[in-house]
Length: 505
Image (tube, rainbow, N blue to C red):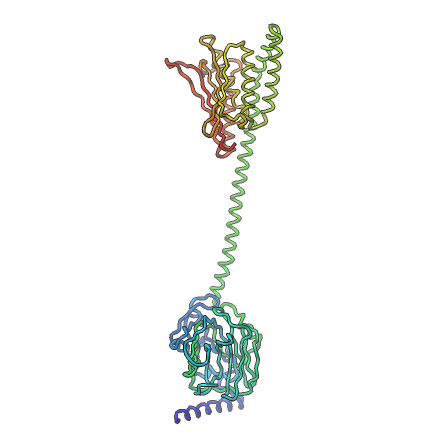
């Protein structure tokens, strides 16, 4: 009894002194005084060291901006709370309590009123209606609440409009004076209620964060708190909104985040531009190479045509026609018809990179028949086509004629009846290719200077095949020229293998 009476005398004396100072225009502290607990230095202390908080079983955690160890975390049990102290600086008669809270979940441990206390200080030693100001989360309504009490006869309070969502940061602000109490969340007014009593404090009671500090209503909070501020005046709504919109205090980190964000975007854009430039250069280079190859193929086509109908060939054909006119008019007519048809087909196929195998073989037959007429059956001709060969298969145009001409002119005719002259053309099917074999039993390859020699035509065909292979990736046409020998090692003719790749046809 004596202890309670002494405490009541202390409270009365403390409040009488504060009232007298207020009536005399003297305040125990400046009305602009502000206490701030922001934890930005990774320490639990008041910013200007005017009070000394005592952490019990708490830890530092990330704040709402993601800054590490810049908010305080209470663990939701009897031995985890933050004691801000008993200083009058923590207990303004007219003031504003501002803080950020991230309520993690309900804590059912404890006893008494079903709530999780956020911040509280008392006006008496009683167990009920003892809060000078209190902020808490209410289980039943699932809302934040703010209250102030004179005693069991007078109490003022307010609650949030929306239900609380756990694991989300909220900015709570309680303002009070002798007439009103107001509660704000995230800068918006929730409720303003009539108070009409003077706020009094128990000078021996601490301001506690995260703990009810009450034996009857012993409850705890689990979650994070940051930027606890106590103002000795009532803030306007605009000032409260400014607090809510306050930027990240870690300016260096903000700058680095912005720098990394925009720097990363710029680097990505630069990388994309560089990749596009590289790709365009590659495409241009590829197109240029293809253009050069196409021009080269076109040039080779013209040269092949010129080689195939070279002046010597035309002159010899006309001479043969003249001779036949005197000897055999019917054969001369046949020769002229075949010769004109041959020239027309050569010119018709000369502007095409590919023709069908049947069209190529038609040119081969006409060419050989013309040569047979010219040389009066001085050689025999055998033409063999494998049944597995698709004659509609597309192959490079006009690639066999120079080899036919060389076989006749430089292989067979120089034999001079040493042995029966024979020319064979065979077409077979291999795995992924068509094989054209042109084989003669003539004198073999040797330097030749006879009129009508056509080694240039052979070279042009080889260049054309190489250009087509480069233009069409994955295609590998190939020509082999094989020198044939008899049992004595003497020249016994020439074999030309033309391998036409059909994998992409």
